[in-house]
Figure (cartoon, helix red, strand yellow):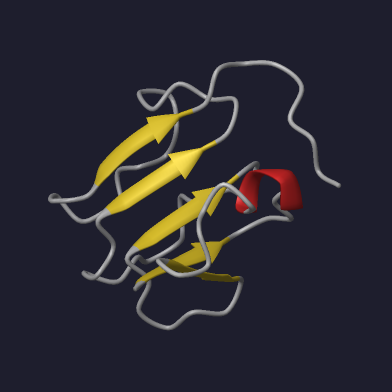
Amino acid sequence: MYKIQTLNKIAAIGLDRLPRDNYETASEIAHPDGILVRSQDMHGLELPETVLAIARAGREPTTSPFRSAPRRASSCSTPRGRTPTR
């Protein structure tokens, strides 16, 4: 099972795309495999070495503060546009 930490309020419609059999999602996960973020300032955030991927909604990965990510972590983004939060 993958452990995914959410840094902002992520829409249930988006989280529902992660099957509960394979993914645990919560804002408080000590050693996450991945991070979902919407609009969090990540410059001062220290990420654990367990992080394999970071997904940020509505941003280009090259302009997002992924410098603090472990080198083996990949980053991706969703297309720009309206991001539901309900």
